[in-house]
Image 1 (cartoon, rainbow, N blue to C red):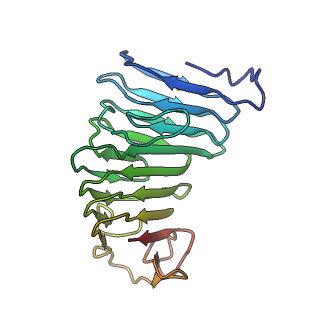
Image 2: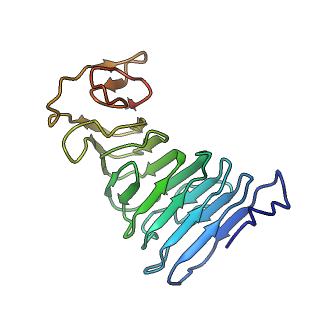
Image 3: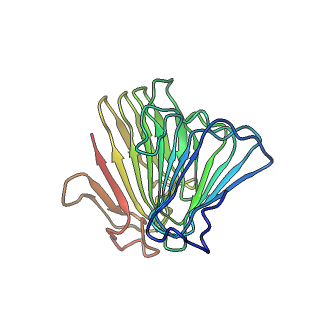
Length: 239
């Protein structure tokens, strides 16, 4: 499926690409155009991996069982059964919105600078060149592990209700792979944030608190120089 990026007959007017029903194939490929397109992905069928190429502009990719052209709430991610890959355009303006706010069991999963795994999905969401990545969870007590974030991506995780837990730490128990901004929205419930840099053997400098009293910068985040406290990368948290 393509939006004829080379022709761009509808210059200035983006397309709505709304996939309905179940598509079963060896592979599914979707390409946007030069304008701001909206992709609505409610499901990815088993053994039918899907790839979205946004080409250009601030495209919006809504993923969730209740996603529509106008919004994305009240759905689940359990309908993503095979790999969903999102290639953002070279301009890096694409926005990916994952919704798991529907009524369902508690979920757990991992977020990294290249993929989102778990959260009820049998297949991962793989991404690159994305400006904003949003993951919204529901009212159960969910568990999130953030291994890394991309330098070019602002990652926002809304925990919703429930007594949720978030761990921010790489596979080597450091924060050195937190390359971009990470926003954590606690919502209701009693939530726990654990930030672990215990595996780092290099001297670090960092700041806890920040201008709003709810930020963590430095400690190897956002800079190869671990004595530098860079506010281009770090963690903001609330509730």
